[in-house]
Amino acid sequence: MKKEKILVIGASGQIGVELTLALRKIYGGAQVVASDLREENELLKGTGPYVSIDVMNKEMLHVQILRQNITQVYLLAAMLSATGEKNPPLAWNLNMQSLLNVLDIAKEEQLTKVYWPSSIAVFGPTSPKLDCPQQTIIEPTTVYGISKYAGEFWCNYFFHRYGVDVRSMRYPGLISYKSSPGGGTTDYAIDIFLAARDKKNYNCFLEENTRLPMMYMPDAIRATIELMEAPAEKIKVRTSYNLAAMSFSPLEIADEIKKHLPGFTISYQPDSRQDIANSWPQSIDDSSARAEWGWKHEYDLPKMTQDMLLNLNAL
Ligand code: NAD
Ligand code: SER
Image 1 (cartoon, rainbow, N blue to C red):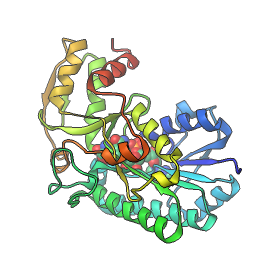
Image 2 (cartoon, rainbow, N blue to C red):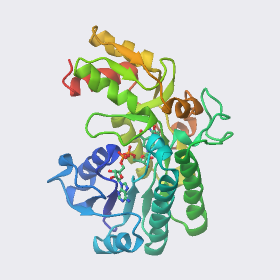
Image 3 (cartoon, rainbow, N blue to C red):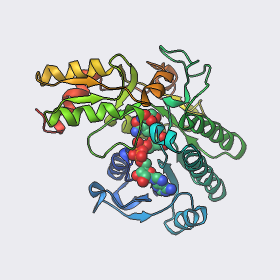
Image 4 (cartoon, protein in one colour):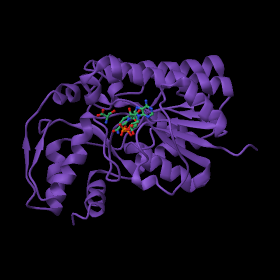
């Protein structure tokens, strides 16, 4: 059997750092090539190979995939919801062209698997707010959401038309402490912990009762690896799986932090990100992921909060 060699594109980002480290634990450092447009993240240094790649340069990407004998690609390069609204053409271009470049090369070189994440941002104001189903009305209103929804159908197309084994899930907002978030609407749920650690008031850019689906990074990394390792016949959804763990509002997470740090304070000053948050569901029905490949989350709001505060040395 051919030994897998993995390329992670966008490895210096919020998910990329932790996913690369987790894949290196499973496959061995040398088997997982980290790549990004920006410099190698400090946490990755010395743990395995790093190459500088612009995913928009298809020729350069193709050469690297051949040179490094890559068999699997995890594509994480993208522009997220809030940053995307600042430059919609750039967000569309990066989010779409990066995926098409990878899918085309995967088809040509018969890569064994491709991973590409979608997001709860595919859902829009007309989708159900509570327990939003796998299949429902999907009318996204951000360029990020539009690009993710289009991308899901490209994945489905390449699987059915060309047999590319590309897998995807719709991450909720991800909370982590190892590497900084890249400009999403859910980033407040990370910033709030940094303010709490620094004993500062947190001035939140969302209103106090804005509930959104969220997940702690260890759950997201495990979900990603479990989806990629599941037997192909178990993967029935070839667009992108709904995935869930917890939902909370700024008020609820602030109250949870106050249980550990009673002096913590929060104020509210909603900005343009409020409109993005208002367009998304409050909770997600991920029963297909649970039934088809056994997804089960571990972290709820209290467990995540305690772990974040411990790891940020705030307790
Ligand atoms: P991030 O912004 O933290 O990281 C993206 C990385 O891609 C960055 O290191 C950036 O330098 C790199 N990159 C950008 N343009 C590139 C290019 N042309 N070539 C190579 N690298 C390039 O994003 P993230 O939060 O780690 O998200 C990774 C993926 O997960 C994205 O597809 C995102 O849409 C998706 N996602 C993230 C979240 C979340 O809460 N973080 C939620 C849902 C979906
Ligand atoms: N966390 C992401 C964002 O807010 C959701 O995809 O953009």
